[in-house]
Length: 341
Image (cartoon, one colour):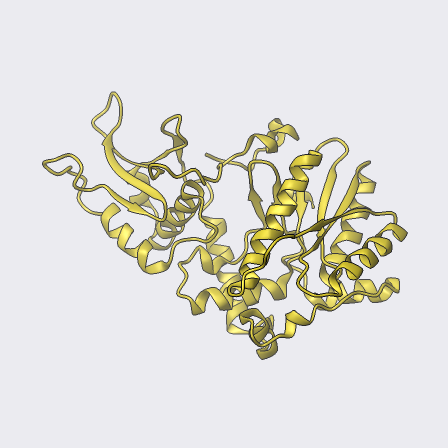
């Protein structure tokens, strides 16, 4: 948990729990850590209502956690369910319920049980879809949302270790049959062994994490009150092509509010436009373009002849993700030395 700090003096953690081995292990470990810091962990159990057994399983999981000294709340996805895209809709509903519950309770940290095997599967799926380099870096260990910080502290831990944690404590878990249902892409990859730590996919994942860490320290600065940022072409020019694309991907996802990074071919086309000659066209706007909910405009800096690329949300877009949300600084702004803008 240390790399995800700072925390409150007595940290309170929300833990998403399905009843499966991964989230149960996370709940136990997070509870022990939080109690050691003078805080507590609250399990949030989402009942999607997709199987008739789900309600009983949610109650059973809540009783199990109570026996371990962990309080819980059951969140239910009600209403009509779609006939197509069910897994994606369930995911959207799950995160909506979790975020709302955290906001209502004033909890700043939401822990998710994704682990190393999940990460390798994610890389394989994104590679098959032609994701850009930021997508191939896998799931982020930390995501800043306006109301809560999403943390994935188990991304370097294999599922076998989490299983061993429960076995050693004599705790039973619930296996969701959809995890091995070949109708779903992730299940097919799991059955094919795509999460093998020695696979080419895992090697690519590790390599992309190294690239991601090298991108830190590139300077952005606030350009206006509407949340836009300015990219200095001189800074872009100093970066390697790989880091240039990574930086662009991260900025676009943050400003545009997209769930996933833009596809690689779209990023490549945008980089061609960003890397061209800096002289503005006769109209002053011939270089402007849009990408994934963002508008790119080439403008002259105030009080200077230097041209800057201004990246701002497209007109009417309100899904922007804050680069640094206010909720994070409720913990300890002086200690947040790892953040940059």
